[in-house]
Image: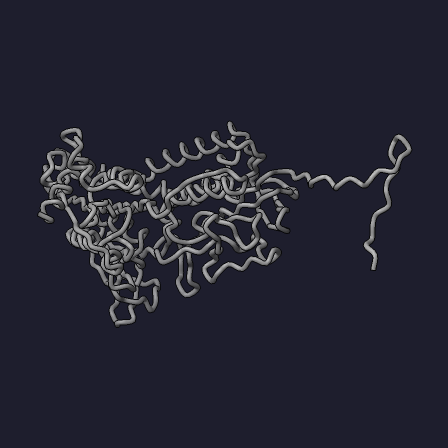
Length: 490
Protein backbone atom coordinates (compact mmCIF):
# COMPACT_ATOMS: atom_id res chain seq x y z
CA UNK A 1 0.00 0.00 0.00
CA UNK A 2 1.43 3.37 -1.05
CA UNK A 3 2.18 5.97 1.63
CA UNK A 4 -0.39 8.77 1.98
CA UNK A 5 1.13 12.17 1.18
CA UNK A 6 -0.56 15.50 1.79
CA UNK A 7 -0.95 17.61 -1.35
CA UNK A 8 1.59 20.38 -1.78
CA UNK A 9 0.40 23.92 -1.11
CA UNK A 10 0.91 26.54 -3.81
CA UNK A 11 3.75 28.97 -3.18
CA UNK A 12 3.47 32.71 -3.75
CA UNK A 13 5.68 32.41 -6.86
CA UNK A 14 3.32 29.87 -8.41
CA UNK A 15 5.61 26.88 -7.78
CA UNK A 16 4.45 24.00 -5.56
CA UNK A 17 5.93 23.98 -2.01
CA UNK A 18 6.14 21.14 0.50
CA UNK A 19 3.90 21.49 3.58
CA UNK A 20 5.67 23.05 6.56
CA UNK A 21 6.02 21.16 9.84
CA UNK A 22 3.40 22.19 12.41
CA UNK A 23 4.51 24.87 14.85
CA UNK A 24 5.20 23.69 18.41
CA UNK A 25 2.27 24.18 20.75
CA UNK A 26 2.22 27.47 22.63
CA UNK A 27 1.53 27.00 26.35
CA UNK A 28 0.32 29.63 28.81
CA UNK A 29 3.18 28.73 31.14
CA UNK A 30 6.36 26.71 31.12
CA UNK A 31 5.51 25.26 34.50
CA UNK A 32 2.49 25.28 36.80
CA UNK A 33 3.27 24.44 40.40
CA UNK A 34 0.46 23.26 42.67
CA UNK A 35 1.29 24.26 46.24
CA UNK A 36 3.27 27.15 47.72
CA UNK A 37 5.09 25.35 50.56
CA UNK A 38 8.90 25.00 50.74
CA UNK A 39 9.12 22.64 47.74
CA UNK A 40 6.77 24.63 45.50
CA UNK A 41 8.26 27.97 46.50
CA UNK A 42 11.83 26.93 45.78
CA UNK A 43 10.84 25.30 42.48
CA UNK A 44 9.05 28.48 41.42
CA UNK A 45 12.03 30.71 42.20
CA UNK A 46 14.46 28.36 40.45
CA UNK A 47 12.25 28.15 37.35
CA UNK A 48 11.88 31.93 37.24
CA UNK A 49 15.66 32.37 37.52
CA UNK A 50 15.94 30.20 34.40
CA UNK A 51 13.72 32.68 32.55
CA UNK A 52 10.62 30.49 32.53
CA UNK A 53 6.97 31.52 32.76
CA UNK A 54 5.84 30.25 36.15
CA UNK A 55 2.46 29.98 37.85
CA UNK A 56 1.87 28.85 41.43
CA UNK A 57 -1.58 27.73 42.57
CA UNK A 58 -2.33 27.81 46.30
CA UNK A 59 -5.72 26.69 47.59
CA UNK A 60 -5.45 28.69 50.81
CA UNK A 61 -5.59 32.44 51.11
CA UNK A 62 -2.19 32.43 52.86
CA UNK A 63 0.87 31.13 51.05
CA UNK A 64 3.67 29.05 52.53
CA UNK A 65 1.83 25.78 53.03
CA UNK A 66 1.88 23.73 56.21
CA UNK A 67 5.53 24.66 56.85
CA UNK A 68 4.85 28.36 57.38
CA UNK A 69 1.29 28.31 58.71
CA UNK A 70 0.90 25.29 60.99
CA UNK A 71 4.09 23.20 60.89
CA UNK A 72 7.79 24.01 60.83
CA UNK A 73 7.79 27.75 61.48
CA UNK A 74 5.10 27.82 64.21
CA UNK A 75 6.45 24.78 66.07
CA UNK A 76 10.05 26.02 66.07
CA UNK A 77 8.92 29.49 67.12
CA UNK A 78 6.84 28.01 69.93
CA UNK A 79 9.88 26.03 71.02
CA UNK A 80 12.01 29.16 71.17
CA UNK A 81 9.33 30.96 73.19
CA UNK A 82 9.12 27.98 75.55
CA UNK A 83 12.87 27.92 76.10
CA UNK A 84 13.03 31.66 76.74
CA UNK A 85 10.01 32.12 78.98
CA UNK A 86 10.63 28.95 81.01
CA UNK A 87 14.27 29.88 81.62
CA UNK A 88 15.23 26.33 80.66
CA UNK A 89 18.61 27.29 79.20
CA UNK A 90 19.74 28.92 82.44
CA UNK A 91 18.50 26.39 84.96
CA UNK A 92 21.84 24.62 85.20
CA UNK A 93 23.28 27.94 86.42
CA UNK A 94 20.44 29.54 88.41
CA UNK A 95 18.63 26.42 89.59
CA UNK A 96 15.67 24.26 88.57
CA UNK A 97 13.13 26.84 89.80
CA UNK A 98 14.46 29.65 87.60
CA UNK A 99 11.96 31.08 85.10
CA UNK A 100 11.60 34.28 83.11
CA UNK A 101 7.81 34.29 83.50
CA UNK A 102 5.98 32.33 86.15
CA UNK A 103 2.53 31.93 84.66
CA UNK A 104 3.13 31.24 80.99
CA UNK A 105 -0.03 31.26 78.87
CA UNK A 106 -0.83 30.06 75.38
CA UNK A 107 -1.15 33.71 74.34
CA UNK A 108 2.46 34.31 75.42
CA UNK A 109 3.59 31.59 73.03
CA UNK A 110 1.28 32.50 70.15
CA UNK A 111 2.28 36.17 70.25
CA UNK A 112 5.75 35.26 69.05
CA UNK A 113 4.52 32.63 66.60
CA UNK A 114 2.02 35.01 64.95
CA UNK A 115 4.73 37.61 64.43
CA UNK A 116 7.09 35.15 62.71
CA UNK A 117 4.34 33.57 60.58
CA UNK A 118 3.22 36.97 59.24
CA UNK A 119 6.82 37.89 58.43
CA UNK A 120 7.51 34.61 56.59
CA UNK A 121 4.32 34.89 54.54
CA UNK A 122 5.22 38.43 53.48
CA UNK A 123 8.80 37.44 52.59
CA UNK A 124 7.62 34.48 50.51
CA UNK A 125 5.04 36.57 48.68
CA UNK A 126 7.57 39.29 47.94
CA UNK A 127 10.10 36.78 46.58
CA UNK A 128 7.52 35.36 44.17
CA UNK A 129 6.44 38.82 43.04
CA UNK A 130 9.91 40.18 42.35
CA UNK A 131 10.76 37.07 40.31
CA UNK A 132 7.68 37.48 38.13
CA UNK A 133 5.88 34.38 39.37
CA UNK A 134 2.12 34.46 38.79
CA UNK A 135 0.30 33.48 42.00
CA UNK A 136 -3.26 32.15 41.87
CA UNK A 137 -5.50 31.53 44.88
CA UNK A 138 -7.60 28.57 43.86
CA UNK A 139 -8.22 24.85 43.79
CA UNK A 140 -6.30 23.02 41.10
CA UNK A 141 -7.48 19.94 39.23
CA UNK A 142 -5.20 18.26 36.71
CA UNK A 143 -7.11 17.69 33.45
CA UNK A 144 -4.30 16.14 31.43
CA UNK A 145 -0.53 16.20 31.35
CA UNK A 146 -0.46 19.77 30.04
CA UNK A 147 -3.65 21.33 31.47
CA UNK A 148 -4.70 22.41 34.96
CA UNK A 149 -8.24 23.52 35.75
CA UNK A 150 -8.46 26.32 38.32
CA UNK A 151 -11.42 27.24 40.55
CA UNK A 152 -10.68 30.59 42.14
CA UNK A 153 -10.89 30.96 45.93
CA UNK A 154 -12.38 34.14 47.35
CA UNK A 155 -14.06 35.13 44.10
CA UNK A 156 -16.26 33.53 41.51
CA UNK A 157 -14.81 32.12 38.36
CA UNK A 158 -12.63 29.42 36.90
CA UNK A 159 -9.95 29.06 34.26
CA UNK A 160 -7.76 26.52 32.52
CA UNK A 161 -3.99 26.92 32.40
CA UNK A 162 -1.92 25.13 29.78
CA UNK A 163 1.65 24.34 30.67
CA UNK A 164 4.66 22.45 29.46
CA UNK A 165 5.29 20.94 32.91
CA UNK A 166 3.23 20.40 36.04
CA UNK A 167 4.78 20.12 39.48
CA UNK A 168 2.77 18.66 42.37
CA UNK A 169 3.91 20.17 45.69
CA UNK A 170 0.69 19.90 47.69
CA UNK A 171 2.29 18.62 50.89
CA UNK A 172 0.34 16.62 53.45
CA UNK A 173 -2.64 16.76 55.76
CA UNK A 174 -2.92 15.32 59.25
CA UNK A 175 -4.35 11.83 59.60
CA UNK A 176 -7.66 11.81 61.50
CA UNK A 177 -8.96 8.29 62.13
CA UNK A 178 -12.76 8.16 62.11
CA UNK A 179 -12.99 6.56 65.55
CA UNK A 180 -11.34 9.46 67.38
CA UNK A 181 -13.62 12.38 68.44
CA UNK A 182 -11.41 15.31 67.48
CA UNK A 183 -12.79 18.60 68.78
CA UNK A 184 -9.76 20.96 68.62
CA UNK A 185 -10.16 21.60 72.36
CA UNK A 186 -9.35 18.41 74.24
CA UNK A 187 -8.41 16.06 71.38
CA UNK A 188 -6.43 17.70 68.59
CA UNK A 189 -3.68 17.28 66.00
CA UNK A 190 -0.51 19.30 65.54
CA UNK A 191 -2.35 21.51 63.03
CA UNK A 192 -4.95 22.39 65.65
CA UNK A 193 -2.50 23.03 68.46
CA UNK A 194 -2.21 26.71 67.61
CA UNK A 195 -5.91 27.14 68.40
CA UNK A 196 -5.67 26.03 72.05
CA UNK A 197 -6.94 28.61 74.52
CA UNK A 198 -4.85 27.41 77.46
CA UNK A 199 -1.97 25.11 78.37
CA UNK A 200 -2.95 21.72 79.79
CA UNK A 201 -1.71 20.49 83.14
CA UNK A 202 -1.61 16.92 81.80
CA UNK A 203 -1.27 15.71 78.21
CA UNK A 204 -1.16 12.44 76.30
CA UNK A 205 0.86 12.51 73.08
CA UNK A 206 0.02 9.64 70.74
CA UNK A 207 2.91 9.05 68.35
CA UNK A 208 6.63 9.18 69.02
CA UNK A 209 7.81 10.47 65.66
CA UNK A 210 9.52 13.80 65.12
CA UNK A 211 6.36 15.87 65.71
CA UNK A 212 5.30 13.89 68.76
CA UNK A 213 8.73 14.09 70.40
CA UNK A 214 9.09 17.81 69.71
CA UNK A 215 5.75 18.76 71.25
CA UNK A 216 6.12 16.32 74.16
CA UNK A 217 9.38 18.05 75.09
CA UNK A 218 7.91 21.54 74.75
CA UNK A 219 4.93 20.86 76.99
CA UNK A 220 7.09 19.02 79.53
CA UNK A 221 9.44 22.01 79.71
CA UNK A 222 6.43 24.18 80.57
CA UNK A 223 5.59 21.88 83.47
CA UNK A 224 2.86 19.80 81.83
CA UNK A 225 2.85 16.15 82.89
CA UNK A 226 3.24 14.36 79.56
CA UNK A 227 2.67 10.72 78.66
CA UNK A 228 4.06 9.72 75.26
CA UNK A 229 2.65 6.59 73.60
CA UNK A 230 4.56 4.98 70.72
CA UNK A 231 3.91 1.61 69.07
CA UNK A 232 7.60 1.00 68.30
CA UNK A 233 10.05 -0.15 70.93
CA UNK A 234 12.34 2.79 70.11
CA UNK A 235 11.80 6.46 69.37
CA UNK A 236 13.15 7.91 66.12
CA UNK A 237 14.51 4.66 64.69
CA UNK A 238 16.42 6.45 61.90
CA UNK A 239 18.59 8.36 64.40
CA UNK A 240 21.78 7.01 66.00
CA UNK A 241 20.70 4.91 68.98
CA UNK A 242 23.10 6.54 71.45
CA UNK A 243 21.70 9.96 70.60
CA UNK A 244 18.12 8.71 71.02
CA UNK A 245 19.02 7.07 74.33
CA UNK A 246 20.33 10.45 75.53
CA UNK A 247 17.09 12.13 74.43
CA UNK A 248 14.99 9.53 76.25
CA UNK A 249 17.02 10.07 79.43
CA UNK A 250 16.48 13.82 79.35
CA UNK A 251 12.78 13.46 78.53
CA UNK A 252 12.37 11.30 81.61
CA UNK A 253 14.27 13.91 83.62
CA UNK A 254 11.52 16.31 82.54
CA UNK A 255 8.96 13.85 83.97
CA UNK A 256 7.78 12.55 80.59
CA UNK A 257 6.30 9.05 80.94
CA UNK A 258 7.16 6.89 77.94
CA UNK A 259 4.90 4.02 76.89
CA UNK A 260 6.95 2.35 74.16
CA UNK A 261 5.82 -0.73 72.25
CA UNK A 262 2.20 0.11 73.05
CA UNK A 263 -0.76 0.31 70.67
CA UNK A 264 -3.74 2.57 71.24
CA UNK A 265 -7.10 0.83 71.39
CA UNK A 266 -9.31 3.90 71.77
CA UNK A 267 -9.32 7.61 72.58
CA UNK A 268 -12.47 9.11 74.06
CA UNK A 269 -13.68 12.09 76.01
CA UNK A 270 -14.34 11.62 79.69
CA UNK A 271 -15.10 13.54 82.87
CA UNK A 272 -12.66 13.98 85.73
CA UNK A 273 -12.95 15.75 89.07
CA UNK A 274 -11.14 18.67 87.45
CA UNK A 275 -13.54 18.90 84.48
CA UNK A 276 -13.45 17.49 80.96
CA UNK A 277 -10.64 15.16 80.00
CA UNK A 278 -9.47 12.41 77.67
CA UNK A 279 -9.15 8.69 78.31
CA UNK A 280 -6.65 6.79 76.17
CA UNK A 281 -6.94 3.02 76.34
CA UNK A 282 -3.99 0.88 75.28
CA UNK A 283 -4.21 -2.68 73.98
CA UNK A 284 -2.13 -3.80 76.94
CA UNK A 285 -5.01 -2.80 79.22
CA UNK A 286 -3.47 0.45 80.48
CA UNK A 287 -5.67 3.54 80.71
CA UNK A 288 -4.28 7.06 80.61
CA UNK A 289 -6.51 9.93 81.73
CA UNK A 290 -5.29 13.44 80.98
CA UNK A 291 -6.73 16.88 80.41
CA UNK A 292 -5.88 16.84 76.69
CA UNK A 293 -4.56 14.52 73.99
CA UNK A 294 -2.38 15.34 70.98
CA UNK A 295 -2.70 12.84 68.12
CA UNK A 296 0.57 12.91 66.17
CA UNK A 297 0.55 9.69 64.15
CA UNK A 298 1.18 10.08 60.47
CA UNK A 299 0.31 12.54 57.76
CA UNK A 300 -1.19 11.83 54.36
CA UNK A 301 -0.43 13.30 50.97
CA UNK A 302 -2.93 16.04 50.15
CA UNK A 303 -3.73 14.47 46.78
CA UNK A 304 -7.49 14.02 47.20
CA UNK A 305 -9.41 16.03 44.59
CA UNK A 306 -6.27 16.76 42.58
CA UNK A 307 -7.51 14.81 39.56
CA UNK A 308 -4.69 12.29 39.45
CA UNK A 309 -7.15 9.70 38.15
CA UNK A 310 -7.47 11.82 34.99
CA UNK A 311 -3.86 11.12 34.10
CA UNK A 312 -3.55 7.58 35.44
CA UNK A 313 -1.35 8.33 38.45
CA UNK A 314 -2.32 6.33 41.52
CA UNK A 315 -0.99 7.49 44.90
CA UNK A 316 -0.41 4.88 47.60
CA UNK A 317 -2.69 4.25 50.59
CA UNK A 318 -1.23 7.30 52.33
CA UNK A 319 -1.68 9.61 49.36
CA UNK A 320 2.01 9.64 48.46
CA UNK A 321 3.19 9.82 44.85
CA UNK A 322 5.97 7.61 43.49
CA UNK A 323 8.77 9.43 41.65
CA UNK A 324 12.17 8.61 40.12
CA UNK A 325 15.54 10.11 41.06
CA UNK A 326 14.62 13.29 39.15
CA UNK A 327 11.25 13.56 40.96
CA UNK A 328 9.35 12.70 37.79
CA UNK A 329 6.16 10.69 38.05
CA UNK A 330 5.38 7.98 35.50
CA UNK A 331 4.39 10.86 33.20
CA UNK A 332 7.67 12.64 32.34
CA UNK A 333 6.15 16.15 32.17
CA UNK A 334 4.63 15.85 35.66
CA UNK A 335 6.84 16.10 38.73
CA UNK A 336 6.11 15.65 42.44
CA UNK A 337 8.23 17.06 45.27
CA UNK A 338 8.17 17.64 49.00
CA UNK A 339 6.23 15.82 51.67
CA UNK A 340 3.84 14.34 49.10
CA UNK A 341 6.60 11.95 47.95
CA UNK A 342 7.31 10.70 51.49
CA UNK A 343 10.41 10.42 53.69
CA UNK A 344 12.20 12.45 54.93
CA UNK A 345 9.41 15.06 54.73
CA UNK A 346 11.49 17.94 56.04
CA UNK A 347 11.24 21.55 54.90
CA UNK A 348 14.95 21.64 54.06
CA UNK A 349 14.86 18.49 51.91
CA UNK A 350 11.63 19.61 50.25
CA UNK A 351 13.27 22.87 49.15
CA UNK A 352 16.14 21.00 47.56
CA UNK A 353 13.79 18.56 45.84
CA UNK A 354 11.91 21.50 44.33
CA UNK A 355 15.11 23.06 43.04
CA UNK A 356 16.43 19.79 41.61
CA UNK A 357 13.15 18.97 39.88
CA UNK A 358 12.92 22.44 38.32
CA UNK A 359 16.48 22.18 37.01
CA UNK A 360 15.80 18.76 35.50
CA UNK A 361 12.53 19.91 33.91
CA UNK A 362 14.35 22.62 31.95
CA UNK A 363 17.58 20.77 31.17
CA UNK A 364 19.71 22.73 33.64
CA UNK A 365 22.73 20.90 35.02
CA UNK A 366 22.62 20.65 38.79
CA UNK A 367 24.32 18.85 41.62
CA UNK A 368 23.14 17.72 45.01
CA UNK A 369 24.10 15.09 47.55
CA UNK A 370 20.87 13.55 48.91
CA UNK A 371 22.81 11.11 51.09
CA UNK A 372 24.20 14.11 52.97
CA UNK A 373 20.88 15.83 53.64
CA UNK A 374 20.96 16.75 57.34
CA UNK A 375 18.08 16.01 59.69
CA UNK A 376 17.08 18.47 62.41
CA UNK A 377 14.80 17.40 65.26
CA UNK A 378 13.80 20.31 67.48
CA UNK A 379 13.15 18.39 70.64
CA UNK A 380 14.51 19.65 73.97
CA UNK A 381 17.43 19.04 73.75
CA UNK A 382 17.85 19.58 70.01
CA UNK A 383 19.12 16.80 67.72
CA UNK A 384 20.76 16.91 64.31
CA UNK A 385 22.41 14.20 62.26
CA UNK A 386 24.06 13.69 58.88
CA UNK A 387 25.58 10.66 57.22
CA UNK A 388 25.76 7.09 58.52
CA UNK A 389 25.13 6.03 62.10
CA UNK A 390 26.71 3.16 64.03
CA UNK A 391 23.85 0.77 63.38
CA UNK A 392 24.02 1.24 59.60
CA UNK A 393 27.79 0.79 59.49
CA UNK A 394 27.59 -2.32 61.66
CA UNK A 395 25.04 -3.90 59.31
CA UNK A 396 27.23 -3.00 56.32
CA UNK A 397 30.35 -4.48 57.93
CA UNK A 398 32.25 -1.20 57.63
CA UNK A 399 35.23 -0.84 60.01
CA UNK A 400 34.68 2.37 61.94
CA UNK A 401 35.58 4.22 65.10
CA UNK A 402 33.87 7.01 67.02
CA UNK A 403 34.97 10.13 68.82
CA UNK A 404 32.86 12.10 71.28
CA UNK A 405 32.88 15.51 72.91
CA UNK A 406 30.60 16.66 75.73
CA UNK A 407 29.36 20.21 76.05
CA UNK A 408 30.05 20.17 79.79
CA UNK A 409 33.78 19.84 79.00
CA UNK A 410 33.70 22.76 76.53
CA UNK A 411 33.93 26.31 77.87
CA UNK A 412 31.11 27.53 75.66
CA UNK A 413 28.84 24.81 76.99
CA UNK A 414 29.36 26.10 80.53
CA UNK A 415 28.88 29.70 79.45
CA UNK A 416 25.49 29.08 77.83
CA UNK A 417 24.39 26.66 80.53
CA UNK A 418 24.12 23.53 78.35
CA UNK A 419 25.84 20.71 80.20
CA UNK A 420 23.91 17.86 78.58
CA UNK A 421 24.99 18.23 74.96
CA UNK A 422 27.21 15.80 73.04
CA UNK A 423 28.81 15.69 69.59
CA UNK A 424 29.71 12.31 68.08
CA UNK A 425 31.89 11.68 65.05
CA UNK A 426 31.88 8.37 63.15
CA UNK A 427 34.83 7.72 60.84
CA UNK A 428 36.52 4.90 58.90
CA UNK A 429 39.17 3.12 60.95
CA UNK A 430 41.61 2.73 58.05
CA UNK A 431 41.47 5.95 56.02
CA UNK A 432 39.89 8.16 58.73
CA UNK A 433 37.23 9.37 56.28
CA UNK A 434 34.37 11.07 58.10
CA UNK A 435 31.23 8.96 57.73
CA UNK A 436 28.71 10.58 60.03
CA UNK A 437 28.08 13.32 62.59
CA UNK A 438 25.44 13.09 65.32
CA UNK A 439 24.73 15.90 67.80
CA UNK A 440 22.38 16.42 70.71
CA UNK A 441 22.34 19.75 72.49
CA UNK A 442 22.04 23.50 71.96
CA UNK A 443 22.67 24.61 68.37
CA UNK A 444 22.85 21.04 67.03
CA UNK A 445 21.10 21.93 63.77
CA UNK A 446 23.63 24.74 63.17
CA UNK A 447 26.74 22.80 64.21
CA UNK A 448 25.91 19.89 61.92
CA UNK A 449 26.81 21.87 58.81
CA UNK A 450 30.52 21.89 59.69
CA UNK A 451 30.63 18.11 59.54
CA UNK A 452 28.33 18.05 56.50
CA UNK A 453 30.76 20.26 54.56
CA UNK A 454 33.79 18.13 55.44
CA UNK A 455 31.90 15.00 54.36
CA UNK A 456 30.81 16.60 51.09
CA UNK A 457 34.45 17.09 50.16
CA UNK A 458 35.43 13.59 51.26
CA UNK A 459 37.41 14.89 54.23
CA UNK A 460 38.93 12.92 57.08
CA UNK A 461 38.55 13.34 60.82
CA UNK A 462 42.16 14.62 60.86
CA UNK A 463 40.88 17.90 59.40
CA UNK A 464 39.40 18.83 62.76
CA UNK A 465 42.68 18.08 64.54
CA UNK A 466 44.66 20.28 62.18
CA UNK A 467 42.32 23.27 62.08
CA UNK A 468 41.74 26.06 64.60
CA UNK A 469 38.29 26.96 65.90
CA UNK A 470 37.29 30.18 67.59
CA UNK A 471 37.43 30.02 71.38
CA UNK A 472 35.14 29.68 73.22
CA UNK A 473 32.65 28.08 70.79
CA UNK A 474 30.63 24.89 70.57
CA UNK A 475 32.43 24.21 67.30
CA UNK A 476 35.44 23.21 69.40
CA UNK A 477 33.54 19.99 70.03
CA UNK A 478 34.69 18.83 66.59
CA UNK A 479 38.35 19.12 67.58
CA UNK A 480 37.82 17.45 70.95
CA UNK A 481 35.81 14.61 69.40
CA UNK A 482 38.44 14.12 66.68
CA UNK A 483 41.23 13.77 69.26
CA UNK A 484 39.05 11.38 71.25
CA UNK A 485 38.48 9.21 68.17
CA UNK A 486 42.09 9.14 66.95
CA UNK A 487 43.31 8.35 70.47
CA UNK A 488 41.04 5.30 70.50
CA UNK A 489 42.96 3.99 67.50
CA UNK A 490 46.30 4.49 69.20
